[in-house]
Amino acid sequence: MDHERSEQGAVPTERRTIWGWALYDWANSAFATTVMAAFFPVFFKQQWSHDVDVNLSTARLGLGNAAASLLVALMAPVLGAIADRSGRRKRFLIGFTLLGVAMTATLALVPQGRWAFALFVYGAAYIGFAGAIIFYDALLPQIAPPDRIDQVSSLGYALGYLGGGLLLLLNVVMALKPHLFGLPDAGVAVRLAFASVAVWWGVFAWFAFAWTPPDPVGDRPRLSRQIAAGWGQLMATFRKIRQLKHAFLFLAAYWCYIDGVDTIIKMAVDFGMSLGFDFKDLIVALLIVQFIGFPAALVFGQLGKHWGVRRSIYLALSIYMLVTLWGASMTKVSEFYMMACVIGLVQGGIQALSRSYFARFVPRGQSAEFYGFYNMLGKFAAIVGPALMGMTGLIAKRILLPDNPTAEQIQSLGMAATRTSIMAVLLLFILGALLLYFVDEQKGRTQAEAFDLE
Image (cartoon, rainbow, N blue to C red):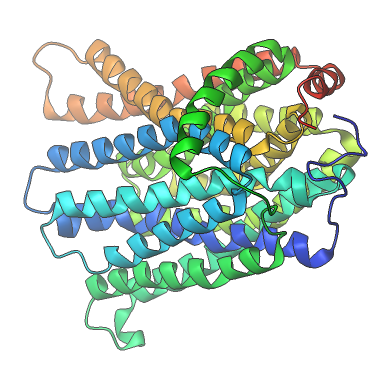
């Protein structure tokens, strides 16, 4: 894949096209911050599954998240193959977005105590969110000039951090001080927050729909035939990736280190609560990550251009390793804030540069298919990483606890086991860094060219 080519011939480089694409990250990040990270887990326990043991409530939430992640992971490469064969990447992006927006709005209407219905609606919204990302990512090689792909990818993540952070800030203030907004209580404020995400997502997604290039015009087979062909192409893609050695190595490295990144994202609030920090403090830390992540992602885009993408990814991985070691010994909420600042500096950067770096190994005309695999690995990481951390904590606690422990020993050693659990994430970063060492970008480009679709 040389620097002069694009998937559809000449790459549209108009500023409006790039900003339209990047604004989709601004739009959908509201779901990731307000719904996924902040309010849905808490509201689920307090409203929809409030009348059961806390461990059962946690199990329900965990299984619901795992089921939705698994379904998306299994769907991702097939959907990508169908989109490549049909050319309907943008149409799929719109369809999954509408599903996510509609289901997010429905969350505001779920009655109290209806935990199963809440999980179903949330799962459908998550499928819309994650499914749309497959086709959003697949548009990147089409709209970005090859020499600017790292900066364009970073722009998307930067706008995502800023947009998601701004709406989260408004919704947090609304939930903490509902009377300032004329609302009776925090429960109504959270429901209104879910509705605000749907509106935000839908309104700003319009710019991506309107400003990015339309799907190519041409005769297309019926959807049933496309689905059957997509399954067949999925098997062919497995065989291709096995032959594309450096694409395969990068995907393996990415799976390991993004597993660590996603685990820290998903488990940070739970980890902080286990250490006894107040929920309000944890939300402040989440906001810190969002607002630092905005300029930091832009800086990483420039860093990748001038210093090299691999080196920049290695820098981010080194910082994550230090953060993991730091987290294992953290005792004060001020340290949690400082750690949030450090994570904000690298989180968007490693995500953005990984997305654009993978584009170098994707054969022309097959970006949706290959990004389907890329996103599939991310979704499986969302399942494996937290489970690894949880199992490490349970094993450590069993080893540390003596026979007939006192209540003080249970509390103290339980906290020690929690600290030990985060060390499991360090192994993922180390393994990812080792695998990335063997990736050769130039050889990967050459291998990809042999599988280009004319």
